[in-house]
Length: 232
Image (cartoon, rainbow, N blue to C red; front, top):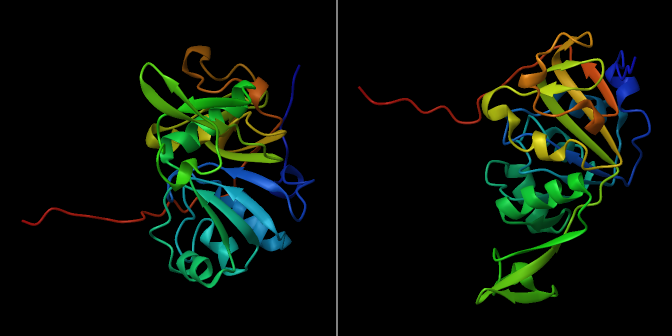
């Protein structure tokens, strides 16, 4: 029987070295691999290129790696909630590659599917398209984008089994689903890890073939990035 269960976060992240490129799932603080990020901080892994929709906030999520200056380059779509990110970017300490959100998702999905490149109309005529091949389809110009190439993909799921099958909960699916299987090695951090056969096959979002390592996180803070309430 296939068993991809890893007992600790330390074992799960084995092989991640300075200078590597990592995909990290999540959207803001929703569905982020909290235990894995904390372990990267503890390991003091540096010179990282991180592909993520954004960089968390100053004291949580990828913001913790930024505080320790462990990230060399961020490839992101939205970065508006992190003051340290802004400071490092403006000072030239951090290299930043901003990518339209749909393009970022598709560059992950293309890597997941083994597609080397694709065309998209997003970004044509802007700085995003500079230096890239363009082509007209059906009277509309498109930009060729290359699929991402990452060493590790670290995703967060609600439930998983020991064969690596994953189920996400609500909007926490976000970028996790397209990043699973999109790197050389995919590590899944889950809230609940079950024996093979315990998950309903019809409910599985990501099949185990996309995952090489899976472990159960110890705790999840699940912060709310911004809380808005209606005035009475």
